[in-house]
Length: 277
Ligand code: AMP
Image (tube, rainbow, N blue to C red):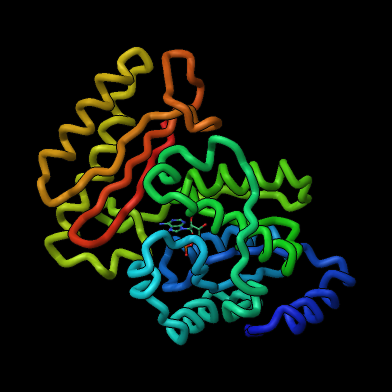
């Protein structure tokens, strides 16, 4: 695997591959790689000639400085994992390589930015659009792969691409889960064994909603879901919503593609999960 820390070297190398007509796939991550990330790389390998994975813990998308400070950064392990799945290129820049200084610009993507996660983490999606815009500009991929795990993030990036007429194609990849249903996340290493058990209520409740889904009973399903989660006192619910998968506005009986999304803090760790109904 080629490992670049500067955009100049990465771009020089990619230019040679692009000149030969290679289709470039891109998987942006913040590292602490798990099977979820690796599934994105596998999917990218199936659709592209060359796969670039980036590892960059983006400071501008963290709303809590402590969260940024304790975010895991096991770079050597990550490199081994990427080599094992035959990733072609790792781009692992420092903050100064990506940001010119204290950049204040942000892209107005409308109400998507203030819903759900955006309401609880003001500024989060401004940071996400900043970094993804910059990474897309550096890598100029043909196809970029993102996880359904961050459903709203996928919608935000789709919106950005549309607004800016960017030519990259986006692919959403399914959520990889532990055998007990917990959605894989780099943050799971912060869960104690007890937290880990309590956290299972999130995926269980999402599955219950999917199993019992009835578009005429959305309010009732939501109320039941909220009370199920609130019955586990160790889990502090931020939101449980059933929304239209295109607009992220509340679903109703006419909605064609509903998505149930949840966010909660378990112990000291904030978790998100969702299911497409
Ligand atoms: P992150 O490193 O958390 O920024 O995630 C990088 C990419 O991996 C994003 O597109 C995430 O949606 C995706 N991802 C994270 N967790 C999972 C998972 N459990 N299954 C599939 N994709 C995931």
